[in-house]
Amino acid sequence: FLANYEFNIASSVVTAGGINFRTSTTNSGYLTAPVRMNITPSGQITMYGNVDCNSGLDVTGAINSTGNINLTSTGASKIINNNDNFFVQASGGTLYLQAVNDENGVKIHPNDKVELFFDGGTYGTAKLATSATGVDVNGILGVSATGANASNAAIKVNVSGSATVSYTHLTLPTSDLV
Image 1 (tube, one colour):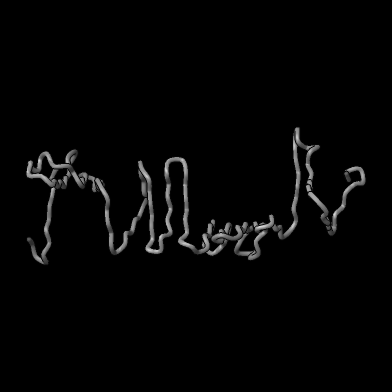
Image 2 (image 1 turned 60 degrees about the vertical axis):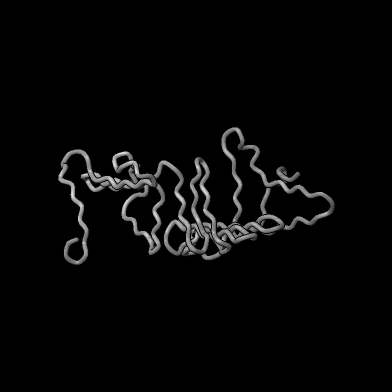
């Protein structure tokens, strides 16, 4: 031990090697014990097994993984990348997707509506929101088609039983009414 209770391990290898930390539950010797951590001469650290950071973990740079990356908070919110599926789970609160800070793009309310926003910092009202009975649109709903589907641009209302379809500011050529 050095001054201030420091314990230093150094490797003077320049081009290869590094420092390996090994542990084993048997008394078979350190050379056959599995490597738990490796530090390369360039400073890259490779951990084998779980890393528990009770006081938090600050990362500068990319986090790369050949397996799953799970980030879990004490509130049970988590991000899971499992093969081709990517999950973001809130722990019961509203889940926000923001392209820039404080501008909502998507708000997912638990067991409730999903809201889509246009420029959430300027327009605070959702442009589209799901509900138990369908979809609410706040603004203009544009329908268009191009190419082979150009003649199929339409809004269709299918109703079983009796219903009322109401509209305001709707302009259609009479030939388009069915």
